[in-house]
Image 1 (cartoon, rainbow, N blue to C red):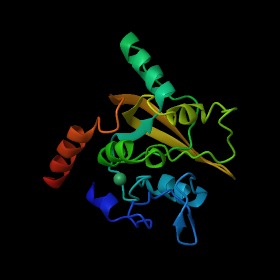
Image 2: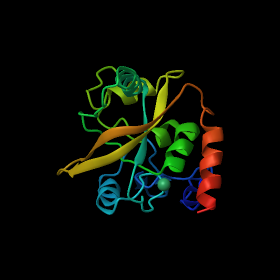
Image 3: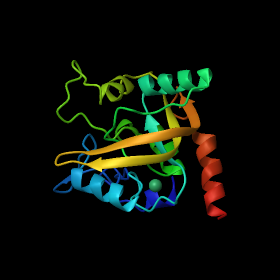
Image 4: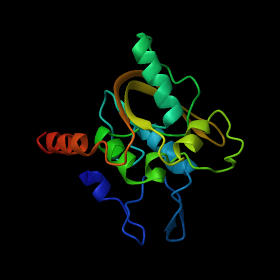
Length: 188
Ligand SMILES: [Zn+2]
C-alpha cells in the first residue's frame, strides 16, 4: 500500500477511504463521488485517492473495459488517443492508481452509480457500468496532462495524450509494478 494511502482514514473494516469519497456520519459512501472533495482535488492538483499533491508531469487513472479497448486500438493504429467525453473520475499518482486498480472496484472506479441505472448507462458512465461486470478488463493509464471543469453540479475531467498503458484482466495484475513503484518512490 502506498504510504499516503496508508495514512488515509479507514472504514470500520479497515479499508482506506479515498479522498473523493463522501462520508455520511461515520460511514464512507464508496459508491459515490463527493462534489466538494473532487473540486478541491481538481483545484489543488491533489490525487483523488490519497489527497496529496501530484507533481508536475503525467497523471494516472484507472479505466474500464470500453475505454481500455479504445486506447489499445488507438495505440495499435499509431493514433493519438483523446478522452473526448469528460469523466467524473479524477487523476491520481501512479502508485495510488496501481493500488486502487487491485483493491476495490469503488476505489478503482470511484465514479459511482449516482443517478445511473445499469440498464441505461449514459455515455459518461457506460464504461464504469461495464467495468463493474466481473471478469471484464480495464487498465491503469498514464496521461501527459489533464484539464478540468467545475460546473454547478459536477467536476469533470478530460485527459490528454496517453504516456503509459497497463491493461489488466486479473485483480493482482499490477502487484509487481506497484512494488517496483513503491520501492522507487521510497528511494527519492
Ligand atoms: Zn495518491
